[in-house]
Length: 305
Image 1: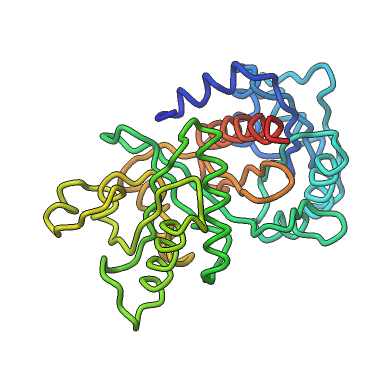
Image 2 (image 1 turned 180 degrees about the horizontal axis):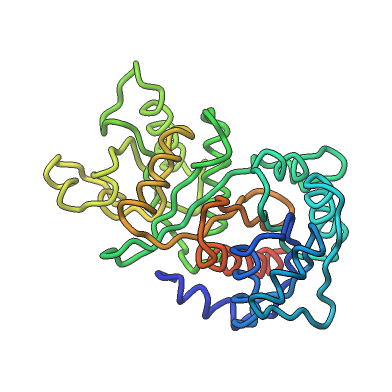
């Protein structure tokens, strides 16, 4: 699947999932809910201020039906806890961040007894449809892990491979990014990239082609890679960009959106269920694409059980 329209079409072909939305009292969030219902890809449980949710629903023409519901909560924390509990108890398949700060949302996700921990590192991925490119570009981790260690990067890559499989990419090309494309003992990002590449060659990390270090241009441009004389099956053809830290990831994420006018969908991977996590500033379209990604991921997870 190379475009979000293809992902939406795939989600439409699957049984609808139930999405529990934390802090759903926001117009952009509810417009995404409306769009997802129009596409028939999900049904919803909405947690938040009931009167405000009902007001917005009436304003935009969103009608809930069947087993869908609005759950009135007394606080942001209660909305997050309620949505997470619904997924943990099997009453919903996906949890989605609404108009709430990421830290408050993740606090409920990561709760030791009541959260959705799976034992794996949780990582964030932003998937971009960039004008002029013939494939989706996935950036991980631009929002969750601040300065991941090599073992954490190993698990971030594993999470990403699972999502790529769900999207029909059986052997994703993963570029471990740094500021330069040569190993420099003074630059930890280049050492980690080289280690991941070697782990991949020795079959310690399977299911993808991983190489690095790459500067950004050499990872996404065949011409730039050829100019530098880089001989790698990943050079210029990367599906996944593994960023060295959250600063690099966050800047790349926002550059894609504001400079490249890219379409975006975003998830948190590695938990017991798919987690839709977008920026509060992201559009209803971005939230719709994120829901579609979660539906496809949930179907793949169920198939693998």
